[in-house]
Length: 179
Image 1: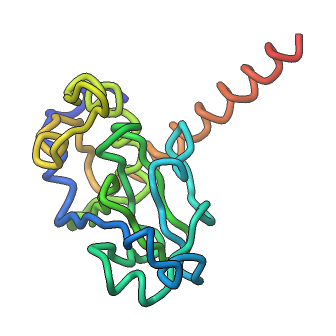
Image 2: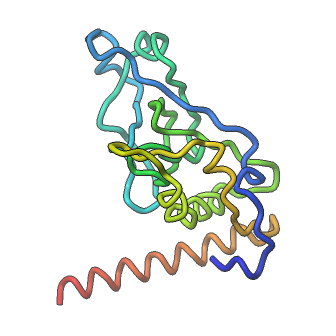
């Protein structure tokens, strides 16, 4: 993504709101193994992608006993601790833990484009992360990272082109690995 084509603006201009999550107490078995997918950093692919299910699930009682929130399908998620800057989008409603933030789109922002922006800023977010044992970034600092915001009508096209390039790169890497 080129910053020269568009005036960089803080990522927060592409986001209308954000919500964090939480973890139900582990010592209460009835809070776990429910039917609500519960996303943590371990559920995020290395490259921005889609989360269709999670390693752990919580119950409604677990959701109510924690600071977790159920996030609608199609809402971009970003890790703010450990795998700082990893982004994904759930294909189903999903609860999140405290290391994950849900980002709600500002008017005129395409979800596919926002995911590409999140992928683009991941190295910057990692560089801004602090902590001696576990690295993390405050959501305010993350949202202050400058990004190129394209015009609304160009965003889906840019995202589609970048998806095509990502696919070509991954296919080429697979061929090279076989050789």
